[in-house]
Length: 628
View 1 (tube, rainbow, N blue to C red):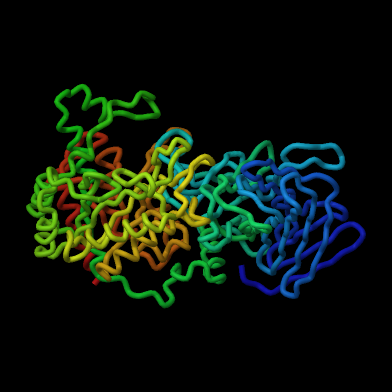
View 2: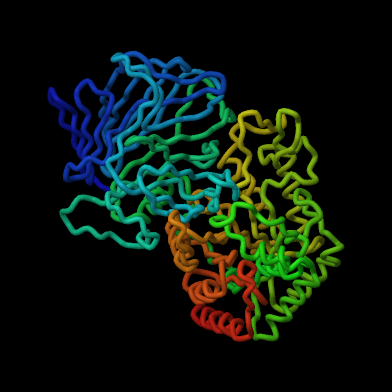
């Protein structure tokens, strides 16, 4: 987004601002602006109507808009002021710099901020037209930098998309596999929707129109008190929506984050553009390699995580073969009725992990790191050891250390289990929903738990695999304790949660490793290793998307967002043996090889043979040789 050319020309018809790679035209008397590439081909007509709802009032713009143009020296501002039904004053500011165009909304007044829409919103125009207005779609394709179900990194411009920290596996909610992902979208003119097209570099020649328009959200992470950023298209128009849910308060004046628009050459440039912008503003200092401490060598060691083996054992151990077969072959695309839930977490035990590690040793596999997965705890919120499953966990960890291995503990983010209700976000009826990272008493308790789990007087583990960061609280009616500080909601609250955990971990063990699946550049200071997270299977047409391809795209997004961070390649779930074997060969090229299966594949029931384990051992040997 760097550059230096910026000029403005005004006549009776319009004001035209020209930057390095764009042209913005605002017709005289209009509150809209047309954003085009350097050749004049329009990307979008920007609707400068916005809405900032309060928890107790819907925001509608009305009356004639007042339009002002200000020369700020290094940039130009177009300021659109209009009466608001919810605020004393409200204005949309469009800031034109040499390399980009930035849009924000400013309000005067006090109230609890609910939904915020940018580049569109509710209005009652002098013409009598009323309702929701949107910017125009002059592009065909949208790049969405997060895994979803169905797999759709590229989708038609008419398809909505959501980025944030709220989601699960239910329909319409499986879009927070990265939580949070990079908060950006890419808009392309081509019709190509193939997953592998994300990896393509710029395909245009000099002089041709730019092929992508990037749109990212810029704000300090502590001001990201929203749960999701949504791209919402409808009938040739779109707007962006931020959901604050009434947990951010405007006190006399409030300014929204900025939507930053700038032309780029390829989809992944949208992520690097976000990262570079945040780094330049001082909002993501740990997102680049510059000045970064070298990662401890053991962080790069191949790891074994028992979750896949637990899932395979849960099916293999079922006494009813018909139920086991149904669970193994269940496909939501073909059968909407899910088989009975498997007791997978009950299969995290010392005895089983000893058996799996012994099997790996017999086949020449020596992981440098072992991850004890869900669930070694009696209660997720207290992180107390379930002695019936893991007797003398401290001693077991010491044994692994004696063998040259490190041990990570699975940590369930947000979990309220076992916590006092006053340390939780609660429903209107007072029922705990999740831990409250805005409460200093919860943060103190979490830090105490972490020091015990990693410290020499406790379990002595070496770090955490953090999971379920997408379980952030969401709801206008939810409430924390009176001790909860302002602004601890949404993405900002997750950053506080991870920051508390990581700071305590480093205090207990300076080389502790924190693995998480937060791919936003501003989260580089609260995690050490980026996990690619659970794999999906099919695209919108029902076709199987190769696991290796999905993971390659995920890793490319992770590297673009946080290039200094190692990548945990994950390995669950696998649809069948062939996909697993193909991914084994690709993992060392993407990051840290992770082995989840040792004797069979859960989804297909196919066996993993000694020859298969030799394939893994060979890939690990080659990986370690390159790393030396």
